Amino acid sequence: MITVDSLTRRYGGFTAVDNVSFTARPGRVTGFLGPNGAGKSTTMRIIVGLTAPTSGSAAIDGVRFADLPNPGLEVGVLLDASAQHAGRTGREILTVASDTMGLPRSRVDEMIDLVSLTPTEAKRRVRNYSLGMRQRLGIATALLGDPRVLILDEPANGLDPAGIRWMRDLLTEFARQGGTVLLSSHLLHEIEVIADDLVVIGNGRIVASGTKEELLAATGTLARSTSPRDLAAALDRAGIPGTLAGDGSVRTDADPARVGAVALAAGIPLTELRSAEGAGLEDMFLSLTADTQREGVAA
Ligand SMILES: Nc1ncnc2c1ncn2[C@@H]1O[C@H](COP(=O)(O)OP(=O)(O)OP(=O)(O)O)[C@@H](O)[C@H]1O
Ligand SMILES: [Mg+2]
Image (cartoon, rainbow, N blue to C red; front, side, top):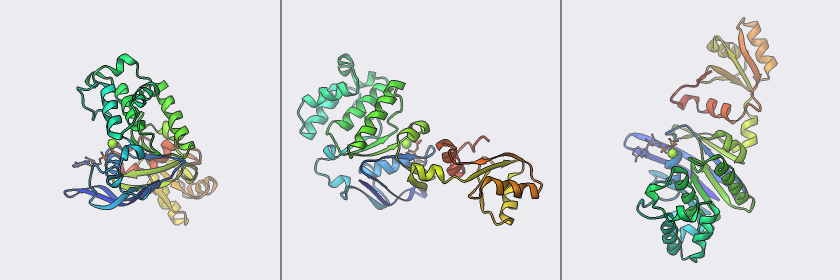
């Protein structure tokens, strides 16, 4: 179990992580989502002790990462696949890590095999690795100590389709056997397929968290109009609180028939009216983080 409790990290006057709390539970894959710069990597770095929090705390099964006697045996970490010694071969990197953790050398070959690096590739220097090969090596390093907890920042980044599917199966099986997985990704489809729980962050703050089913079901009705502000105001007058998202859509908890009736009575033409249920993770992600997206969101 990963417990994050009221984490805040400031850089000068800028708050990168703002009072963030969540848990990632054993037997579940927890997807950590948010736009670029939302604070995902910073939160993960704090969890594994690479960045100090300004306030708050994070623990793995109740223990701070820095206080774990042999962390590699408890927590597998992949944050930045390029943060390896570029002059070492893949095999050397795994061998050094394995010796540090006090593991048998046979584990190195097992991991090279597991992540499908060929023997020739394992002998190549990491500076000459492709992005996907670095990522595979990073996953091998994370799994080396047979940990119960995995913390992976964009692990699918650079993997080919077969690699993505392999990783999906690996993480699902890892969780099924009682492991805890926290993974960040921009690949919403990947997260939708693999995650049991979701934590959504925007501008350093948690904007939603819960099981995937809860979050995807709780999206209510989505309406679009040529004058979204008038629609939001008309709904408000009718006692239906709604949120006007950055993409010009209006979301409410009321059912579509009621929203349609209000729009008709107010003479506001609708361009779209539907139950947002089942709209999928992308819609949810974009509406929850609309205020924090750089691009605004295309309607
Ligand atoms: N050492 C630092 N000094 C100043 N600002 C920092 C530092 N580290 C991170 N930040 C800022 O904190 C914010 C969050 O960064 P972070 O890397 O956690 O985002 P992210 O959610 O992982 O984004 P991405 O999806 O692009 O990987 C960014 O605005 C970033 O510029
Ligand atoms: Mg990041």
